[in-house]
Length: 161
Image (cartoon, rainbow, N blue to C red):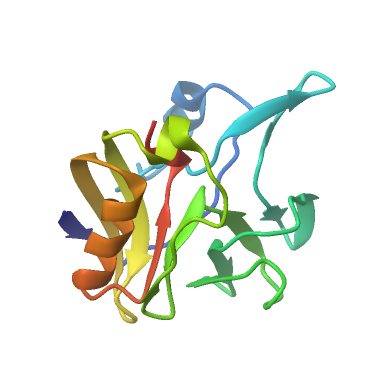
């Protein structure tokens, strides 16, 4: 796995409600990294993430479970959606490393988990926020590599698909 430290990052969760190219054109400073973090579904004509999402301190989508990434007063953290008073928060497709422990997925999704795919994840060694990428691995190997690389928290993003 390759780890890329994010430099002095200002982490935000963005759901622009417009084409990404339009949103990017409006930014004064382009993001260092912009990552799709969850699977999506359509409900009543609106495209919504399948995980738990908190926007501006309010629960937008509640899947009831998960482990993810969020911000509180401009600082980033990993954890459960119900532990902190998140300002912005989203779950990854699965939280693979939590408190330094490898956590295998609690459900089965052979379409995504068993396939050897190019994967991307977001994690932390406790001090630094990192993006982790690996080529041609299943979800279990991806999570174990993140733990072996010293990450304390790590979430798989968008199922690796």
